[in-house]
Image (tube, rainbow, N blue to C red; front, side):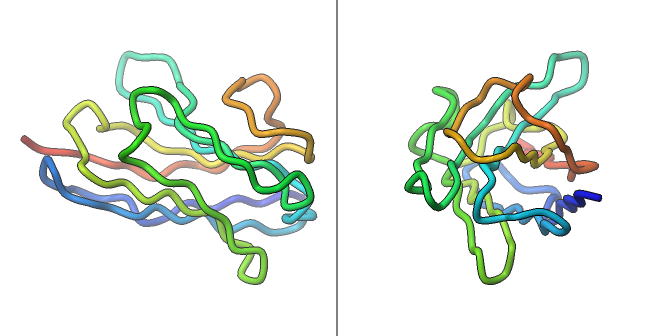
Length: 126
């Protein structure tokens, strides 16, 4: 069974930084595309960043709202996915989820992802 466990969430002030981690197990990590999503209270879940499988070049894509501030990365040896969040804003407050799908391409299309973690909460105060 695919397992994804997020960690690293917490409270941070506007302009600060936070790094989220996602531990992956029970699937071929390097062959899988990975994504970060978030959902704020009362809003739909939205894609934040995605990174393609290693054999696809580990290409990254970002939502316009986080481009230049967030960085997605992966470490195959540790089976870890990361989201470095810099210059955070109050509108970044949300539950953050990691997700996986079998390798093909990086995408923010939610319907393409097969497995999801339980989420980690990020709260940005002004």
